[in-house]
Image (cartoon, rainbow, N blue to C red; front, side, top):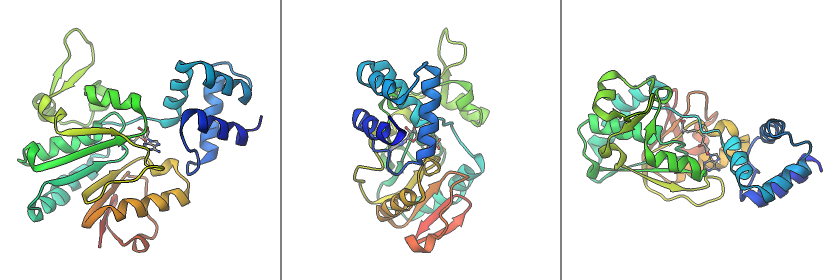
Length: 260
Ligand SMILES: C[S@@+](CC[C@H](N)C(=O)[O-])C[C@H]1O[C@@H](n2cnc3c(N)ncnc32)[C@H](O)[C@@H]1O
């Protein structure tokens, strides 16, 4: 079996559409997982996906790459705190609507909730929705327990205010209930499902890097369509929109784009 046929059969079994992802990367990730599990060819890999649920989960985990952390790229979060959020607070009479897509283990949407709390807003003044394809990572996100590697950019003052060490655990910290309750999680496939609209700010960070240019353009258009006028799109530090005007966006900072 070649990789093309493997990919189509695996897509059915896993309920994922691989179109839109950089296929070379999917193949590399598949090959490395097969090596780790001593699987010799794609046919055997399909058999394992059919018969072994824990392998199926391992494949999905390996494919999705859930790396995330609080205040990832601190300079961009400073810009968010000092410019973008105050601007939104000033001009919004309604709830500020923020969407983290994809959210991985929750570090990103919880970072936003901490910043909004620090800016003096209470939970009823904003809505944060956080979406991801991977149901296992969403379970972790809802637990909101993190080790120090996810927390390395959190200033000491905020660490003391919002996190408690978990008793009898060496390196695990529980996020405060107030921040936990400020974020709503949902399972969503951002490539194949519809989006809800009217967002003031959409974060789509460290996701476009896995996608083909065509898929990236489709999603940029979908995100922009669902932003309010003058709403913001916040990307990862290594992700760029090469022709923002084409999408009705202005680039306003390294990682921020604003809808015209
Ligand atoms: C590297 S994480 C980025 C998390 C966070 N935005 C950040 O920058 O720290 C990428 C996430 O994309 C999710 N993902 C991959 N394909 C997806 C899809 N089609 N729909 C929704 N989420 C997807 C993965 O499950 C993973 O949690």
